[in-house]
Amino acid sequence: MSEGGLYSLATRGAKDVIDFAMPRVLQALTEIKPYPDRMTIADLGCADAGTSLDMIRGAIHHIQNDSPETQVTIIYADQPANDFNALISIVHGRTRFESWVDQFDNAFPLVSGSSFYLRAVPDESLDLVFSATAMHWLSTKPCNITRHVHMVGASGPEFDAFARQAREDWETILLCRAREMKRGSKMVLVNFCRDEQGRYLGNTGGVNMFDTFDEIWKEFVASGRITRQEYENMTLPQYYRTAEEFSSPLVEPESPCFQAGLRLDSLETRVVPCPFSEAYKRNHDIKAFADGLVPTVRSWNQSIFKAGLDRGRDPENRNQIIEDYYAAYHRRVMDSPQGHGMDYVHAYMTISRV
Ligand SMILES: C[S@@+](CC[C@H](N)C(=O)[O-])C[C@H]1O[C@@H](n2cnc3c(N)ncnc32)[C@H](O)[C@@H]1O
Picture 1 (cartoon, protein in one colour):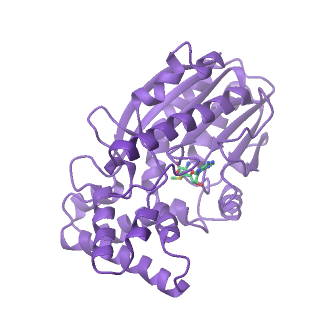
Picture 2 (cartoon, rainbow, N blue to C red):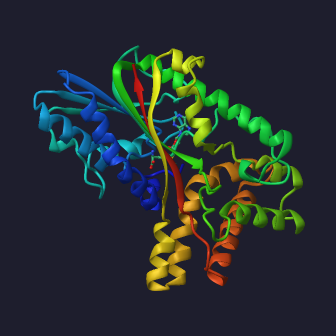
């Protein structure tokens, strides 16, 4: 993800997604009462933590309103390559974001560089697990997709390989959490999905965002700017699960996750509108729209696309290709803004550890 706190600046929509999870978080906390003297909450895949500050503030407030003496530890976890300096600056109030740290006497932030594919804390440590918009990142890319940059455009054995990897990864994530969670604790997960109507991120009826990514890279192949192999290398290691794929290990009694004590309390899907296209509908400012949307997209896919380029290329040449790619996307939005956007499509889940 982008460094230097840019993530939270570029991803207003991701904060909206988390804010919609707030009632679910408070409900989960209410259901785990009475609160012990010490509680631990983990935010997995938190990036720079800017998007979840208000949610965490609300959770601590909810707990301490009921039980003022309860001391709360917040574990912010992300993968080792995350920009933890930005995270610490944001959480400790050294940026424009309103920190919660100085608002509570008995709440303590800690940071973990453990992937959610690993256990990060000792058994039965966590009272609440939260994660938003992170678990679509697979542990590994099972294969390159030859005719698209994303699994939403894959088919046949390539699609099957991604679905299989996603099934295994989901089970790994859940089994790690089953160990870490206390009995009676809850997990609120908010993840990208393909919903009942086939909608997914950037594909809610207008221009399909992933097809746009793909079309522009195919133009770069056609013009000789990048090679076919580089295009294939750009396959994004992501998978958008369906509600059924999320649910099955949590409702089928023979599943290892079910047997480890995890139960699905509830799941709903929700579309959270792209803040940039919504603003455009109101103000018709095309440039502001393109200037907002393109960096948001870039914040999460630039590193993968860049890594797909041949290592033998001159670094300046690689940078220029990437600049030109996002410039081409920007032009597309400017030329024909109608239908562009990145509406979020998420599955909101609450899971119990019995
Ligand atoms: C789109 S950001 C979401 C950030 C924040 N949770 C939000 O909703 O705004 C996805 C985050 O997931 C993290 N991530 C991806 N794979 C991960 C893994 N295996 N373990 C932990 N974090 C991971 C990325 O580093 C990134 O910070």
